Amino acid sequence: MAENNAGDLSPEQTEKLIQFQDLTGIDDMDRCRTIMERHNWNIEAAVQDRLNESEGRPTVFGSGGRDGRPEPRPPAVNTHPRDQRIYTVSRRHPQGWFQWSYMVLLFPFRFVYVTIFDIFHWVVRLFQPDPRRIVTDPVGDVMSFIRKFEELYGSAHPTFYQGTYSQVLTDAKRELKFLLVYLHGDDHQDVPSFCRETLGSLDVCEFINTRMLFWAASTNTPEGYRVSLALRESTYPFLALIVLRDNKMTVVQRIEGPVQPVDFIERLTRVMNDTEAYLVTMRHEREQRSQTNTLRQQQDVAYEESLRQDQEKEKRKREEREQREREEQEARDRELEQQRLIEEKERLKIEKAANLPEEPDPKDPDAIRIVLKLPNGIRLERCFLKSHSLEVVYDYVFIQEDAPDEFQLLTNYPRRVLPCRPGDDSPTVPSITEAGLGQKEMIYVQDVSD
Image (cartoon, rainbow, N blue to C red; front, side, top):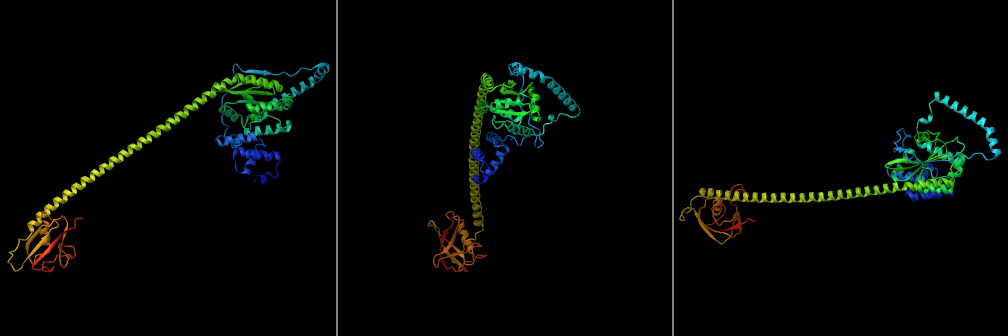
């Protein structure tokens, strides 16, 4: 897939594309190529922008200005602290009579040119507002400067931060890094040599890329002009070293004029070493705050877990208590129901005993003697009229103390169940004669309580 996408790319671009994919983990090679092209194949800037996007911070191509939204307010910067170090490099004076003669001859022409240009510029500003005061595309201003810089001075330069001044200040503050700001004066005569000799120096590039963030813009663009008004530089080339100190971004050093590479590195190193203690202290404070926050989060998690366990225990106790209460209530209900059934049975026995017909005379021709054998072996013997219903026989057994709670009457031979109660086999209970019982019968009482 990489070979298909890289068919029209140079070997260097293909290698950067594969490296960018490895660093970011993006599977879509076309998307990787689009991102690299947007960053002019600068892999450091592309990776940094990708990290900003993954961390939820605005990307250099999606922040204020382009879509009409206001640019995020940058962190406050102390531009003139009391201990700020200012290093100004004066232009070298002419050497020898030839250079002095050349300077004297050109001085009138330069004076007239500068004077006329300043007057013309002043008159134009009277009738037309300075377009640099309206910032509409801060990222575009930075990117256009980077492209122009590479066209004029080549690709040998420190890695430019491809974002706005607000973004680079925020990143430097969050990451506790030094920030070096370079303001480019297009019309200044010392700028070209500084860009080629100092910013193009390999030692300077390595020094900047490994120790700080580097942001640059032209003062002829709205974004660069806005930063120029904030930093108030007096000449070009101009560089400002900014770092977080006392919880505020502070310009700790200014370098003005065509400084040479060795002097440039020496001056910055000296100030950075003197200021490093602030960063060490803040890193320690941040680490302590982070540890405190982590400990607090762990304590919160432990408290929530303990609270959850306590709630679970309380819930189980409540459920167990409710279960016990339900079981106790059910036991009480069963006891009450049993008591009610006992009372109902006693009432029914009394009622049936009162309604039970009197035993007829055994000599009565319509009398029949029935022997009833209970499950416990007790025998009951009584005379009934043949016209009596079998329900009378059932009630006689029912009112006995030794009778089962639920029972039915069976004949021995042939073995059959007698329909003693309405609803057993028919809506009416047959009489003793209709049931086919003889003059003397043995009837068994069968317990059906279970």
